[in-house]
Image (cartoon, rainbow, N blue to C red; front, side):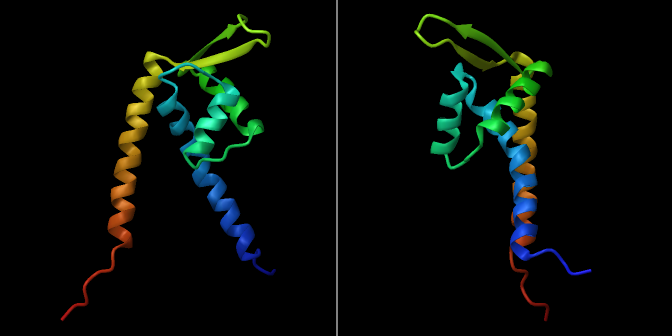
Length: 118
């Protein structure tokens, strides 16, 4: 059996890596209420391109888990659902951010060249 093409392998692993990063990114920026499209733009402006078909189910899941809450704003001509982080979500965000920093330090240590032994 032939191995998968390199591009497919990297794309698959990149997708896995980005999946958890997207959760943390949403929790980081939703201290201020935002509707879905504004959140997509905020993430894209930061360099995290997320598809709407990925973001909206994620927002619903985070809401079901109690990490986000939402309200409909019907003041404008087009109703928009605004999401914001809950107290539980803030605790989860802080824990995930601490883990991200720990992982970053560990990966940085692994990627540093080690000096040659004498």
